[in-house]
Length: 126
Figure (cartoon, rainbow, N blue to C red):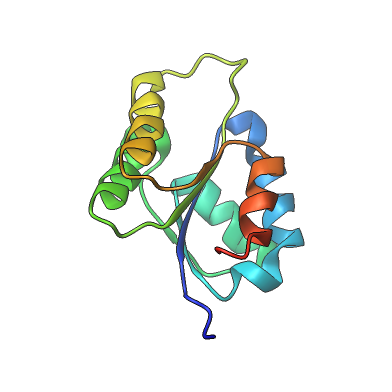
């Protein structure tokens, strides 16, 4: 059976950027076989640190979360990995909530922490 190429969105709040970079480096062999995109700084950091090809959107607070949400709604993103920081207030919190909501509405898997992201990557459905 041929493996499907998925489009995976990578997003992380400031306090979680190093965590998503380390996760991407650890999972580079799997991720390199898929299309990757992400919000501005996260995409750049993963691209530089892990050597993965990551298409960058706008920064989250400048509309990047909304861009990814639109791609989810259009069926262009298959999985969202969003390492968010629930303990810090975010100026774009309504955008974050909208992205979480749109992923649920369109039945797109969304990992909000490393454990869930690992489960998705190791799933036979991925």
